[in-house]
Length: 145
Image 1 (tube, rainbow, N blue to C red):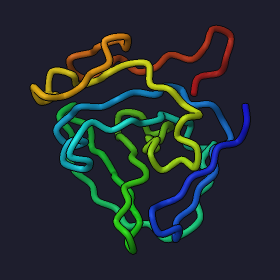
Image 2 (cartoon, rainbow, N blue to C red; image 1 turned 180 degrees about the vertical axis):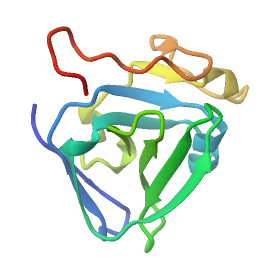
Image 3 (cartoon, rainbow, N blue to C red; image 1 turned 120 degrees about the vertical axis):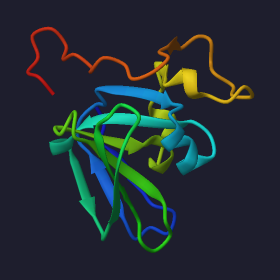
């Protein structure tokens, strides 16, 4: 794996990923639609593999899944960068659009597809899950993420 880097719009917050994503998905939950006015492409990464520099602000709420979600963003430019769920505290969501090279990842599924607006362009080649998918499982023989 090559290291991946990213930043907010203004560059005040930067980060480095030192592990491959556990999953990369397009989320169509209503919260993600409010954040992006569309679905969001998200990497699910081991929290310990994420090194962040710069100040972050945060907002915590309850998601449709029932989990408490802590969303972190740049206080200067407002770029939404990271999310953490009470249901998976060892994993962090990273917004793929904030990567220096967003083409270095490719989504494998649409989640919360049942919440997508009628005009949404969902790639039919991707697995479709109507709501919250099951947690990603570690590769056979690997330690849990």
